[in-house]
Length: 239
Image (spheres, rainbow, N blue to C red):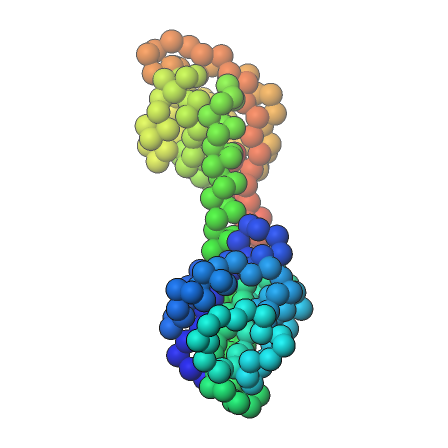
């Protein structure tokens, strides 16, 4: 196996491999193989069939050619994880290199590792997009979305809090409890009722309440919230 090859990823384009990394490959070949449709050449066939492709030398399956191309062979290995194709990587072989099961085991292990990394990256990217969409919705509605821990301390607040109560999210999160934003004369009674409700893991439905704006004015709100519990039923908080 030579120290030469490339990594292709599927990215967003359907049925298309895009070269993302290369080593020892000329600019001419990099341009010719910058995008490889599924089914074309050995890499494309590996993507289409999701099976390792092997060639001990240049043959009829090697569809990409250029002037001065030296004799060589290939392993082209699909990169998959959880049933999803993420790409293909290929390595160059000296001309006439025989198919070897030890090579295949080694390259398959690399492909599986790459697949796991790419799957986690995609999950992180999808989660980030989901959080961004949620934040956009939360910021463009008059509904104040919040979360607390099991003690009632705010752990999340949408930016609408500033429109409704005059508090920026960073003034609430980790600093104030749900019952802290009530008028002083009813705060303790509300705290007692809230903590009793938390202890029973009661859902909050249509609770009409008077909160105190940062400027001292009273704001009438209707609150709905549900308990958040772990796998063992332990209360984590409310949202």
